[in-house]
Image (cartoon, rainbow, N blue to C red; front, side, top):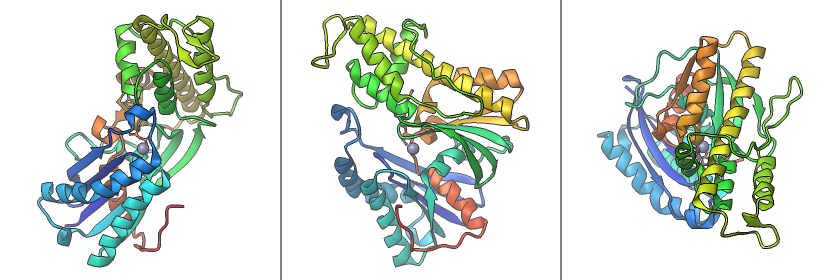
Length: 346
Ligand code: KG4
Ligand code: ZN
């Protein structure tokens, strides 16, 4: 039996999990999500790394306790080494290195995005999904990333397209802030849009693509929403302040139009990619934005039209978590990856 401890601290979540390679399941996981960034409208890197310093130890201790083991029972440590906020990454990486060195435990560094890509293999009870076939297409959408991958096997994936500027989660967060809500804004946008039954009121621009171009762009969308609100008199462009006419009703209309717009962009892009990759057997949707039920339903419709399955990780494994890192670490060590303490965040 081997127990792999996963540690994640790339942004504003301090997270850990234990994967049992014999049972092939996550037996414990814990995430501490920092709430302090809400008032700033985004993650403040210095605050994030200081919070990780305080929380990473207790989070790992709690996870080991829940797993019914101690650090002496751990056979491998997997830790996120990149990409992410430098200070945040350093806390998790140094913590993991220290533990690995002190206890002589093999350490493997995991790319955060590989973690998200393979999070789709985790069921809500922590077991590994056996029904997800290769090759599949993975749509990864979070606050920091929006990308599409072709996934051919565990650890074997190639990027097909990614955002040229902002991530879709970032667009949700920034536009939510623009209309008066705190960070993170994605779930708020979804709640408001549901109240308007996902109607498209303002017809925000959709990215146009030339054949073979599978990139996303969301910064123009943010500007389009800003200018549309200004044109309607809801924002004063000179001061950047919201006017009294930006009512709760308008906020909901913006949220609904935005969500439909991003849904349309994803549906179109995934459809184009499935046209270009005829051997694809499944679609996965991962990252924090994959918590969104409206977007899940839109992608479900695409998948069922094509006769392929859609696999989405449970919400706890969509947002940043230690389980996906422990899982990737488990197959990396099994594939014979050499453990080393000589890893950095770059
Ligand atoms: O994966 P994640 O926890 O962190 C990053 O790696 O960025 O994703 C966080 C992002 C935020 O932008 C947040 O607004 C978005 O996920 N998010 C959502 C929803 N829940 C979280 N976006 C849309 N709808 C949701 N229900
Ligand atoms: Zn992430």
